[in-house]
Image (tube, rainbow, N blue to C red; front, side):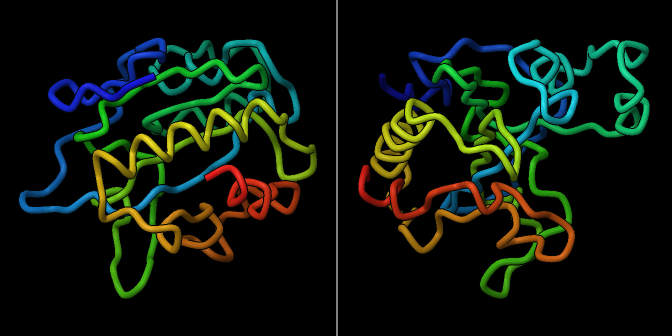
Length: 181
């Protein structure tokens, strides 16, 4: 596993380009990782709907929940599924639309300076060991490419959007992740 600095792509990831991204502002230092969780439909795993949603081609008629998110244009840089498979949607040097309205250490618009990593899961179901191991490997690589990322700037979505977001949720084992880093 490696990161190509020019393309901004992770070598071991399947790349499915998302239209839901844009350029980062000039002179922005990437110095944060935001950990999320997602499942589509909620609580269901392995169907491929997350990738379709992030790529803008989810069939909204397949599930009633999809109608409630049809207006959203979101993506993340990476998704780690329940088996540890990695899909990349946005190159790391581009701005993925994962954080929404957000605030961290006096700065707003966290999408500008962060990398968003989604784990397939929910707030209430434990994550798989392989997801933690894969996430840790990716974080170690990202810290080499973006040395301003410190442990204090590896946060959950709930940390940058409190009251609005709860992920990665109480089932996420931050202590275990720390042991792997």
